[in-house]
Image 1 (cartoon, rainbow, N blue to C red):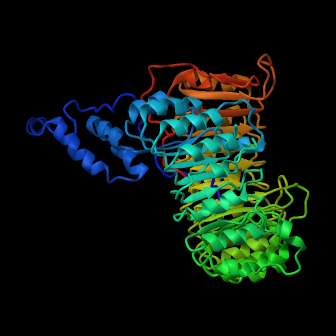
Image 2 (cartoon, one colour; image 1 turned 135 degrees about the vertical axis):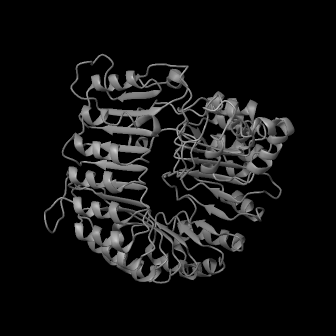
Image 3 (cartoon, rainbow, N blue to C red; image 1 turned 90 degrees about the vertical axis):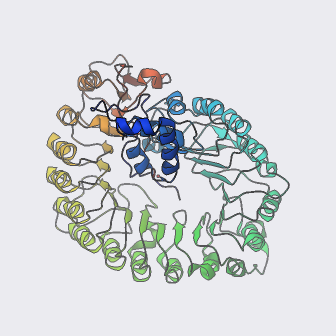
Length: 629
């Protein structure tokens, strides 16, 4: 289950120079102590201490203590997270951190998933892998999200890092089964190969057969996004010689009969299973189907279950033997009716994470509420995402969840109608919520019972859920709702707004009242130049600002770019010579420490306005924060 991405750490220090202290004599120790303990001794002591700091938040704070701590922290950090591949250059990374073994790198913003970014915007992995090949020959792990990765990039990765162990590609594109085959063949110590919601070209290469012929180190193999048939005999052999395999997620070309064979072969150690297709495939003409339940019964260690593509409902009861132990269940690809769903969920008493389509209806959600008392995360996706569709889930299902699942921490809920009363009830019943994303798919829809704006409902969420860090709002909202956010949303880091607000004052409430805001996403809202300028004191400390279909002028965007030299201001969807258009289509702003070098590749329909200032690189880089799509 890919996650959108929420980091909890403050900015770290990727500056090319160490922090300067206002006190000239301060260098972690007094002048008298420095005569007794030379710097190299103190460095050794600090190295031994800092190696026990695993939290990125703690390491970021340690790097800001003084020059010596800054230096030693850079020498001892083995894991680096970069939330925007254009926030710094690969050269700056290798200059600052000398012993990196693990890199998590994000490219395009999530709006690329909705075709809102130019296709040739960039986010290429090539400069990163070529730089790291020289600086980090010991690299073991690469985790990429929304990056453009080529087969040549994967070949260079496989050839440059002899001890490479983990490759995770989430929502990436540009590569095919040829590149995966090279990784499988040359990375002999590979433990993790996870391809998650990526676009993988079918090069008609039998990549599964490219793994070592002897015992492998594989612990996780996920290829459910690969839209190409696979060599099942080779897969069967691979599972058989991978005794450490814990996670296996199959694509839709693997039938239920083949899943049964794999389970009987590798059942003892699997803890996470993606079933691929949940239909019999070529064996459908047999009179007596195999005992699929027996295969699942052999998988007593499975706690995470997903897949269920091309579901044949009559076989769904086969998973009942594992339901009692499940902590995570993903039905987001399965169009399941309440009658099909309820017998399954009634056995899932340990469930903590549940994803499903809204086809389970309010009735299904009521069954979840009655059974899953340990639920921490719920996501309900629309089977029919059209704005005018008949939504099968409503405030009834949400209120049932709030009353039955009091430990809920994260919610994503698509619906067609909602009430303030349901949101107020949830704010009281689920005070541990850290993520609340409600998408009322129709535009400007009020409380469907009272006809009033949804201000009081969302106001209750931000007021009573005091741990809230991520909020997505929708429905009919006035400036009053944003005033509540600014007044009570002191921990909010990510805010998503659609079709909401009355005036610029709404956005001003947020920018002035939410001190920890890192990501601001706005679309189709009446916010203009005054609103944008009201946050200029904040933008250097934020990860990004995205505004599409608002009321921003080109002149205001240029003013912001001139006033903030290290802020990249991209105007997307406007012709280069259209200086007089009334509003820009899309604005995407983020900070970069490396001037205009990051925009060597810019789509023709994108204008990048940035004043280069190479001397001003003393800002902490917020792109190297702790992770969370």
